[in-house]
Length: 217
Image 1: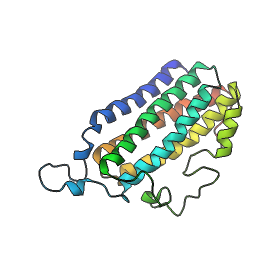
Image 2: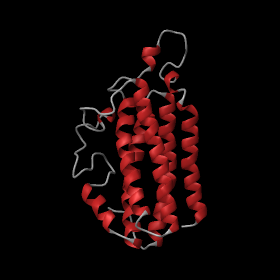
Image 3: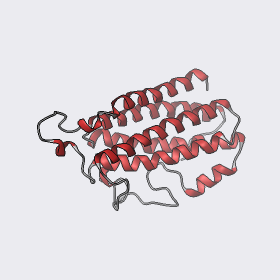
Image 4: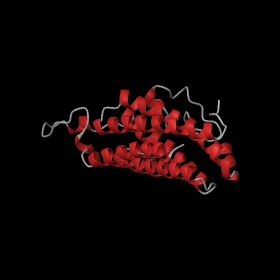
């Protein structure tokens, strides 16, 4: 995979962070009713069971695993392309996670919920946590432990396979926010996640092919 392709994907991810960071300060005034001075501030603050809050909580958890996974592989391979991709993913998703948790603080909402993950998408009863995999696309504890035992090409392949599934699950969630969230900046961040992760999926598919491997079934 060429550095140009990886750089393009990294650039897309960076653009998401710049755009989101530029509007983070305004999130308190961005919602279903973004007017000011109209006495409707309460309507602009999402509720604890809203899609906005649910997405923020669930994606923060989803992103945390991607960060952990990326730092593992960065320490287990010397391949510059994989290390660069892993670093870009870790930095992007760590920053996005900070924004999501920051919004929950700003809204005065809890960072955890008694409801099952994905409830805000209407999938609370459909998602079964298994071996630490709390949401679609997340790796199991067993897979994370296996990744930590691998080195070189084997680590690269398994990381790319796990992250491919992780991105697919993340895209599904982000698309759910685009459809259901009401806070404008959060919807835009979610769409940015979709765009950036779709480009990274293409990059990872090429990297797997170069290594004679395929995505996990």
